[in-house]
Amino acid sequence: MGEQGQKILIQIQEKRERMIDSAKEHGYTSDSTIRCSEELDQLIYEYQRERQKDKKQKKKVHFSCKHIFMNWHHKKMEVKYYVHS
Image 1 (cartoon, rainbow, N blue to C red):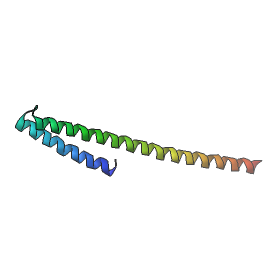
Image 2 (tube, helix red, strand yellow; image 1 turned 180 degrees about the vertical axis):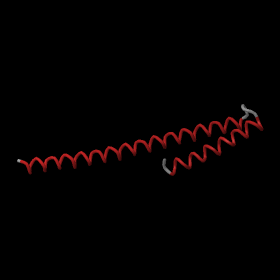
Image 3 (cartoon, rainbow, N blue to C red; image 1 turned 135 degrees about the vertical axis):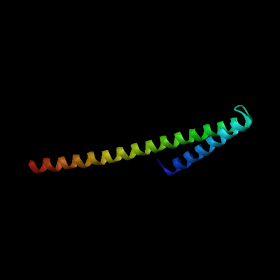
Image 4 (cartoon, rainbow, N blue to C red; image 1 turned 90 degrees about the horizontal axis):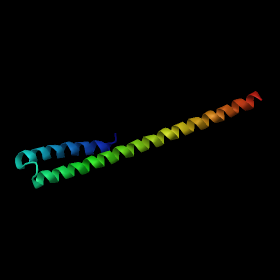
């Protein structure tokens, strides 16, 4: 996970704690608790987007490495073919 994902996880934990404190002090349906809950939802959404972005980048790197290997392997096979002809 990237640095941005780690930062968001810390923010999620802090927001969760504030929401719980607000619920204990003001009740579950208070404006401040609901606002914290909505902000927590937004942070979780941002975290999920960050994770998806990381997965896509890893797939691109994996594909690139596989593509390079296949090209290298293919060229190596051609060289062997020409040597044996």
